[in-house]
Image 1 (cartoon, protein in one colour):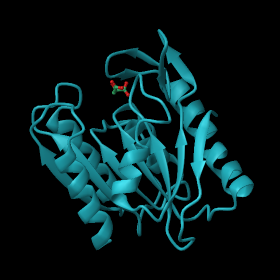
Image 2 (cartoon, protein in one colour; image 1 turned 60 degrees about the vertical axis):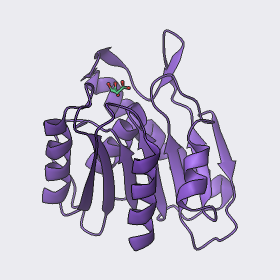
Image 3 (cartoon, helix red, strand yellow; image 1 turned 180 degrees about the vertical axis):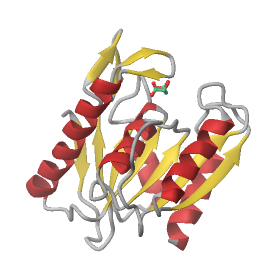
Length: 200
Ligand code: MLT
């Protein structure tokens, strides 16, 4: 997968797996990693799907309606890519925290939904429930921060609450943070994510 890897200055720190929104690239979220923890390593990936030229991490049938077969395939592909990158770049595979926005947050959530070893934790900006039918693995010990919009037209508040509920029921410790700027990734939610990260 097309990506950028940046070695952090402190090898005890996690590797941030940065996952952009629809139409984004691997360049987009690098600055968020610097805000959350400038000493961490960064693996920022571009989604392999092109929707009319807009990169995405998996196909969709319509706005908010996912191609579930493709989601399954692409989630496994991304998981394998991270494992291979850990070998190639020499970072600790068990210390990866995803930071995703929108479509990138959705595939990050699906990594949590499908493989308890995929991520140590996740910062999800405006995610949806990736799969309402899923049986989640045991997620005890996993920490997840969700930034949601009380007036997000793409991820309605009930959807954010449902995601929080499913992750918590699987044992994850989840913090749900609310904003009121629609689907936008705001600076104040990034600051809240930084605070969550520092406390955890
Ligand atoms: C998705 O397709 O993942 C969601 O609708 C969010 C987005 O617009 O990318």
